[in-house]
Image (cartoon, rainbow, N blue to C red):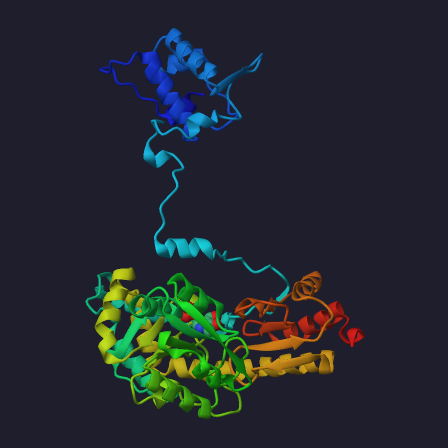
Length: 496
Ligand SMILES: Cc1ncc(COP(=O)(O)O)c(C=O)c1O
């Protein structure tokens, strides 16, 4: 009991003109209103309260009586004194209520940004722990060369202590930017100088920084429909006006973009190398059309090149950025898929005039990325480990992808359409079933298989029967077993 009084932190002002019982009454009332004593919670007896506070029992009784008469406390015969379940409403809303501002649930005035988030709330749900999950986004972490990474970390950690301090390199560790520029030139035909690169905390921060710098509330952004939900959320949080543009098997339908009233369009966000989630690859003709549109309208293209390293059987089409001659493209890259997502290493390649501002915005937002990891990543790229890992993983994923496609075709035949299988670490699958997406997911859960609907990535979500099958972190046996279980759960051919 003694502890309760300590927690209540009741203090008296011995010099106050207010009598002690009145001071105690005020203190206890505030304790109740601020929730430090909850409705129906037992309060200490007058005797123990008096003893603990070193005051007379009469003083405590006087205060309790006042609280009882005002409806804050109630006595239950034979049991003791309790906080009333229902506190007097008029007092709760009284302007004259003398409660410290930080202890009352005052309505908080939100910024436009805060307002925007509160109007479009979302929760991050952990994926269900199921035996086989086709959840999207996870690379094969079990194949990450962790021993090598650990060796490099430990070497750089021991070699010097310069990584402990703040960096003076606002754009990110310079040797890493040089390594990335060379890698992008080789692998993606991106034309860039290390001075055009800003290191970011993944794609997500890159998108946020671009929004801060270029988008005012009401500015237009064209997005792919369906398109990457996490990007859409960032755009909405900055109160951009979104213009959905449909995609087909050749990616964004540029003609539909050019039909839009373009004067309010500041930006178009695209995933040309492996459209998310459909997997379509933007054809060269459309790439050129898109670049011409940007040049003509002075809008910028935000190119998200998140998993283009994984292409199967076809030569990669160069990044849009590499085809651009008019500084219309802002390129975003990430190591989340080729290495591991919690590394939080991404980068922007931007036209030179934007560099100092983006570097400042990054510094203001979170100062910098950890230097030690940047040093390790630099060596990982420069020593050829990155490209060797990508080559290894490309053939591993190719095997998984073939297993998945074959399993889907053999179990579902013409009841599935498979999209985007020539790149990335997921495919989009249209399942022709009589059930809603939620019912399909529920049936899959019943047989221990996790599925993700593509619905949330549509601008106007509707039952499409489309599912994103991520296969990166599964093995061939799991894929075959998962599809077999799914076919059983959906009755495969019975709904033909
Ligand atoms: C379209 C797209 N872009 C980017 C990313 C990577 O985001 P980040 O670099 O923030 O991990 C993902 C990951 O799932 C993605 O689907």
